[in-house]
Structure formats: C-alpha cells, structure tokens
Length: 451
Image 1: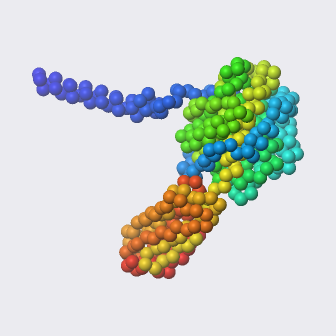
Image 2: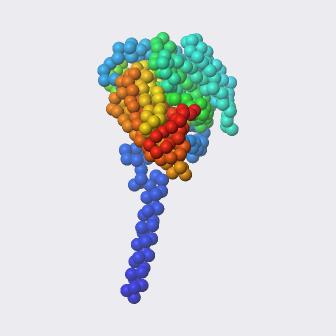
Image 3: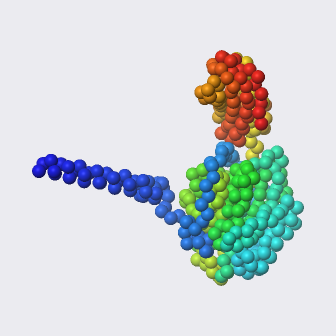
C-alpha cells in the first residue's frame, strides 16, 4: 500500500510541476509580463481593426541600430528661436485647410484632394516632395513625403502623422493635429540647415489598419534607409481641463526608450515655451509608429493625456480642440526633432587591413566629434580543413576626430583565410570590411581587400 501511495504522490507532483512550467511559458502569463506596463495601454485602434492579430505579421532580421543622440544639458538659443515660431494661428491655418475636405476616408476623392493639398503645401516650401503610392488588398492610397536634406549626413529623422479619417467625421484631432504638427515643423525648419536629413511624412490608410505606414516602413527597410528616429504625432490636440493641458503621453518599445528620455529633457530645457510633461506608456499597436518597430526602426508615438471624447465621430472638430495645447505639443516634438537633427555624429572608417606577422587594421574617426566606446573586431575563418575560427577585439573609450585606432590579431595555422573587420561605437554607425589571404604559420600572405 505504501508503495502505491508513494507512486501516486510522484505522479501527482509531476503533473503539478508540468502544469506550472506550461503556464510560465505561455505568452502574456502574469509572471512573464513586463513590469511597469499596463495590460493594454493601447489608446485607440484603427477603425476597421478589432485586434493586433489583424495586422500584418512582419518577420525581418534584427537591424544594427547606432546609439542615439544625447540631449544637451542647457538651452540652445537656436532651438528656442525655432519653437517660438509655432503659434496658434499657424496650427489653426493647417487645421482649417485639412478639415475643409470633410471626412477623408482613404480611397475617396476627399482623401485624394487632401493629399494633393498637402503635396502642394510642401511644394510651396521648396522642399523635395513626392507621393509614396501603395496598393493593398484593402485599399490603394498615397503617403506624402517631403525631405529637407542634411548638410553632411544621410541619416534620417522622421516626423509623421496620418491625414486620413474615418467616414464619420472631419478628424480635426484624429489626426489633423498630427498633420498640422508635421506641416508646421516643415514650414519652420526649411529656413535652417541641419546636419542630418529630415523627412516630413503624412500617411493615409491608417484608419484601415496602418496600411500606408506599413508599406512606407517596408520600402524604407528594403532600401536600407538609415532611419535613426521616427516621431509619430497622433491626437495631440484635446485637453478639455486645465490639468490636461500640462501633460501628455508617449508610447515606446524598449529600443526606443532613448527617444523618450530625449523628449523629456527637451520638455524640461524649454519648459517655459512648452509646459507639457510626458509620461511613458510602453508599447501599443494603435498608430503609425508600429510598423517602424516591426521593421527594426526606433520610433515613438505622442498622444494627448485625456483621450478625445469625440473620437471617430462627426464632432471631432476644431471647436472641440485646445489650440494652445496642440501648439505647445507641436513645439515639444519640433524641439526634439531639431535638436536630434542638428547633432553631428562621428564617422568610423576602416582605413587599412594588412598582413605580415598576423593581421593589422587601422580605424579612423573621419567625423567631426569624438567617437565613444569604440570597438574593433577582427574575425578570421578558413585554414586547413576549414578549422580556423578566431576573433580578436580591441577598444578605446574615446577616439577624437582624425585619430586612429590600430588593432592586431595573431594567428598560427596554414591555409586560405577569410577576414572580416568590424568597427563600431556607441554613437556611430557600424562599418565592416572583408579581405582574403593565405596563412603560413604566424604569417599572413597575399592579403587582398574584397568587396
């Protein structure tokens, strides 16, 4: 009898352990949730989607993301001058133009006419403007993109919003407020030079399931665009109570937390002109930032503190907006964008790879500011029977402009080898070069740089 009871206890314990392990492995189980985030922080969803599962499942390799710009410690007078040019009359003018078309459901003449209006507005600013056309199973439409090219960089910063609406109403806040912010930023920034390239983008198809931004982010990924940050403004104009006008929300994933920090510091530095404090909310799939995340780009979503009572209705009008709040929120996003785009970045160049007694490489900072936490890795594979697979890493805390870091890898084998040299820094893009040669004991012979 004792033996039978003992066996039953063992079986029961095994069953309990199995159930416990299974629960812990289930996605979203309470013990596996990220701390500090609400269960469903989604502020809203595109009109025709019931859940995140209705969106396109994107599976792409992880992208290398260079470290992010660091906000300044004190006020920059140029940025102060910039943001003070955003006033209520500027925002109101863009809102009136956009809402004059009425509801702008993607695929309708009203949406096409509003796209044409946005295009012509960008064109009048002497910016490089284009339609980004897309065709989807659900709907065909156009995003409108204007570009202000950087003076010395192809790195890209994006400010965006969606100009389409649901069929029910004129979408003054959703998302006329975001589009007005994009247009105001373009109108002001066109008069200044920035180190990095800035794109001003307005999407359609958002209300049908983030369709326009999906195709835009996919094309950017396929073009290998170096997008450093995406600032998405969607519903930043509703603040019915005085307390609402001093707060805002920002949604981010883990990779984009640096943008949250940057924006918060801009809010403090220019508080006298902005007067809005943001609270991080974690992840959400409810706006056009989402597919930038899916394709590996850093992005945030700016959103009003008090969700609009007239959301997706005929009463989402300018009369129900707080123009002071929308103006100050636009200033905050503009300050963040401008400060990021102004900052030069170090540029690493692998200036040489040579053989001899081992492999020696030289990496030079050809940019205008110090490179931080520089690491150079030499990886060698091949050799007799393909058994060689070694790497050597060397680093330095700071590499000033025009200075070089020399690294060396010592080897001992025989046979053909392939060499990969990778250099990166915490505030610079990663660079890679390849070479091939022949290893004879400790000597590397006939080393040739390969494409």
